[in-house]
Length: 118
Image (cartoon, rainbow, N blue to C red; front, top):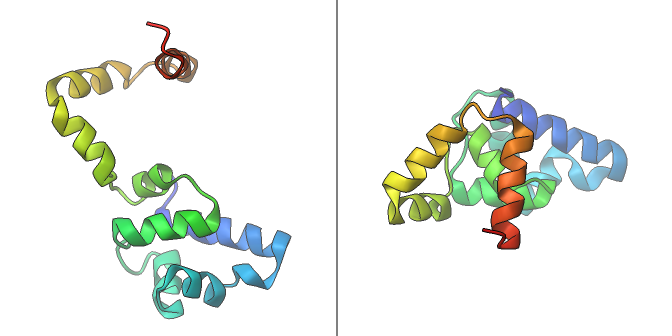
């Protein structure tokens, strides 16, 4: 699994090489409303990943999926926690059953649910 900070730095630097200075460490930190020194430490893995709110803002700036960045940080969004809390036994069973399923099977299931094809 990719380390959170490494992923953030790689994504930011890729955007910087494509789009220029607006993705410099200082510019991204300013748009996320954190100190550049803190973002640098996050990217180097010197501090724990930031809060859910900060990760969400970072995901928006880096054009990343919030849940993916949260997962890389070892976190689950409050929204997903609420969904699981609503029916904990069903969702825990579902996740355990899907744990070893191939990706194409999970994608098929997601499409069925999304399209309402029960």
